[in-house]
Length: 332
Ligand code: PBG
Image 1 (cartoon, rainbow, N blue to C red):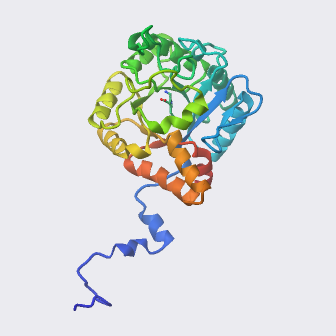
Image 2: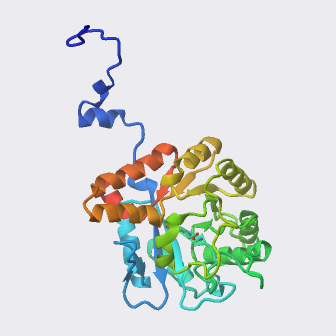
Image 3: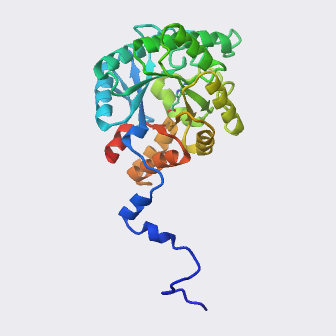
C-alpha cells in the first residue's frame, strides 16, 4: 500500500490549499455579491391605512403610499440599486384602466418616490395588467375568454407612457405578449420618452412559484391560467428566441424569471447577449426558504446568501429579490 502521508508529490491536486482560511476564500471567490446587485420588488395598495402583511411571504407587506416612501429611503440607505413597483388599485375593470390613470396607485407612488429620491434609486415600473383587471389576466380578453394579444399592446403602450410620465426610470413589461417591447418603445418615443429604457421580462415562465405573489398583488386569474402566454417550463431554446426577439424590438436589458429553478436559462442568456441580464427570485423561492427557516430546518441567512450568489454565479448581473434590503445590510 502506498502511503500519501507527508508525500511531497502525491499525484493529485490539492484544491484545499486555496480554501484554508476565510481570507484565502475571500481572495479566490470568483463571484461576488454587493448591495448594488440587488433590486427590491415592492407592492403599494390603494386605500390602505396601514401596511398589510402578506401571510405567504413573511416579512413582506402591501404598502401604503407613506410606508412605501419610508421603505424606499431605507432601500437607498442600504445601497441597493433600485425598486420594482407593483400597484394594487381599489377598482379593477376589464381593461385595467387604473394602470394608466395619472392618479392610479402606482403612478402616484412613482411621482412621490421620484420627488423624494430623485435619481438615487432606479425606479422600475412593472408593466402588466393582471393587478388592474377584474379577470386577473395580463391582457384584455375576448368574449370567448382568450387573452387578446394585439389590442393588449395598445394598452401596454398607454401604460408605459403614464409610468414614464409619473417618473419611472425604467419600464419593465412582464405580460409576455408578443410584440410588447416594440409597442412600448414606439409609445415611449412618441411621447418624448426616448431616453427611458425598457427592461424586458423576456424569458418569463408559467411558474408554480408565483403562488404567493398572487396574494401580494391580488392578480390571480379568475379563469384559466397564464400558460398560453408565459413560457412552458420544459423549454430552453425558446428563451433565447424570446430574448433575441425582445432585443430586436428595442429592449435595453432583459430578465429571466423565476431565477433559482431556471439557472440554466440565466446562464444561457448571459452567454448569448451583450446587454444587462437580470433575474427575478420570485415569491415562491422566497416562501420556501422562509418556511424552512421558520421550522429550523435550514440556516436562514446562509441559505439566502447562497441562493443570491448562485444567481450571480449563473451570470445574472442583478437580482430582484424580496430580501434585497436585508441582504444588502448583511453585505454592507
Ligand atoms: C405579473 C407578475 C407576476 C410576477 C411578477 N409580475 C405574476 C404572474 O405572472 O402570475 C410574479 C412575481 C413573484 O412571484 O414574485 N405579470
